[in-house]
Length: 355
Image 1 (cartoon, helix red, strand yellow):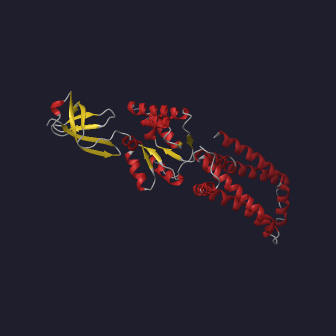
Image 2: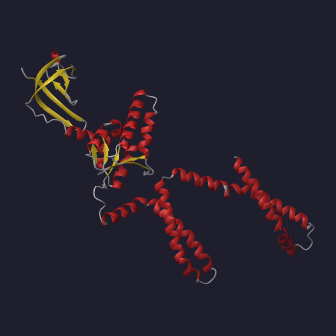
Image 3: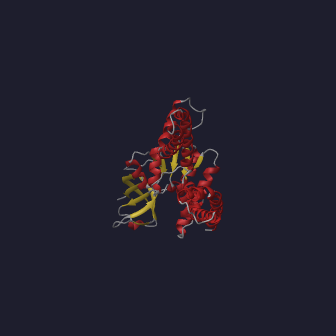
């Protein structure tokens, strides 16, 4: 508000001075049509200065402060990738306009004077808009051109994996990374980090604890010299949900998504995006158990169905025991009857061996 008022005052002073200096030509011009002009030159000068000053007071903020504020707001909202793309497009557009300026200047007047300036504005604007709106296509084109060039130094990985919030909060990603099995650059988009910070500031104590655990895990990953972790400002405009933005980024970057979110897993697969599910990896490395094998299990609680007992293996796999309710708080031998395997985990059904 204060800056606007100052700009109005400065505009009024500047245009008032301009009006005073241009009053003489205006006075002479008016005298050509009005022979008996009763106003003196001093009065005309004063009126012209006042009119120009009032005009400057009204319009100055709209040609100085307002455009500047709009520009700052645009820069604040836009990602670094959008700004860089716009700058590159603007530069290319201005170069093309400069090349065409000389031939256009040879045209007869007034075309020779107008078209070079019009071309400068038009190509600069088109270049900026084209590169901002189609930046992912240009990035993909550059990436494909890079893939045709000689490969990088030995040992340097080009594979990138997008990391979901659930995978960071889960914590197992840190242990997996320490083993060296990932072999890829972990890309954490800025909006995933923002969601992680939002969860860590939650009023709910459980959510807050999970969020802070996720931040600690991310810190461990960044400290691990064996893993390359990148916090990226790359984003998808026009999409609010984090899962949807991850899926679209996965398609644009041709990168898999590391997660243990079952719903995100399904949505990504439906849209043709590869998913690295931590639960699937955990299930893959579990000890293989086949129907008919026997296990020693401690029955610790009742099952959901009548007369069922429930126990757990050392790796956390749930074992549902038919007719096992009476063995609660006891260690018994059971025979595996069925195994249910899903992305959410593994469940084993069994019955007491002596029955």
